[in-house]
Image (cartoon, rainbow, N blue to C red; front, top):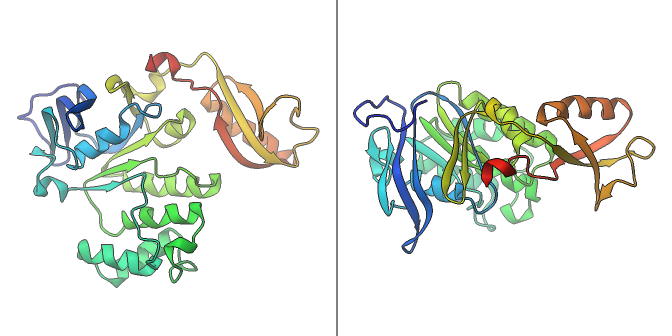
Length: 292
């Protein structure tokens, strides 16, 4: 992983952004972003809402053509059809018609990817969609709806994956399962995984691409991010007498920890005391200084 490399040296799997300005209708959102990736791994794209994460993904996916600068996939301009064949983009928008059954949607995408029924069945099995496959998309819960487009990216292996907040609106158990599947994908692939949650980022990736107000704020190891204060909210049942009910914000019990690495231990201790945890949420942005 190097900054602003020579474009002549491109590996079979590579992403290059060279001073990219990109946006909508001439209005820039990304402003002079440069980095390159040539090593298979999960690269967490961190940033607050509105920072430019989705614009970055759309530019790499060839949906947006840079206003200026170069965006390349495997040495090819990102907007070209040949470049697009090398990647799969999971948008934060589901993109599946409400009137379509789950199985029909995956078969439709399977035809686009030229895969067979066995590949569709495998994707359904991976995301535990067997009992949902004959339901219409409109009949699914928000968490179930998220699993269908995630299943789509497992229909065929690509060299590069762009995943825009793939576990949003999922309960912690399902979110963890999907992160584990994605880690399996990344063994020999490049995966860009966007999030605004530092705890999730540390769980899935070692490298971070931090975007702030359309600019590159950081490109490097996630362990280099230092936090002074880490406050989490815990949504839980059977927490009376274990968590302080006087220290709540809405449905969340508030706790201050030393950092994201303390979360697993905290969860284990609470579960051992009989607390049924539904969600752990960052209540303050630990990356605030980085994003200024």
